[in-house]
Image 1 (cartoon, one colour):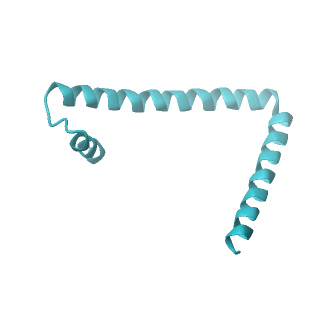
Image 2 (cartoon, one colour):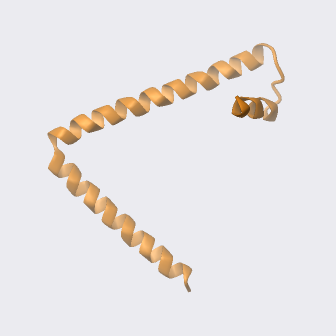
Image 3 (spheres, helix red, strand yellow):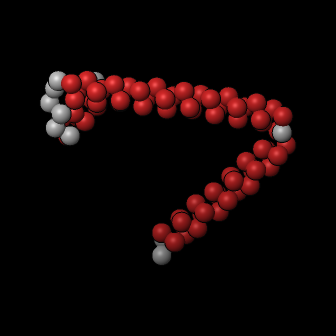
Length: 79
């Protein structure tokens, strides 16, 4: 509720039809986002079950790359 009040104040809605429209769009966006996350998580889980080895290799490569990037950032930060 406080997020909606802050956003409404920031864009100067105040009240009335504009506020109801804004609130409807805000709620619709949250619902759509949650549905999309649930859908992609489910399809990703199904794909992992079918091609588990490939996803494990991609995950390991991604983790290794992230580790190397993190180390390089730490080393450059000390200079």
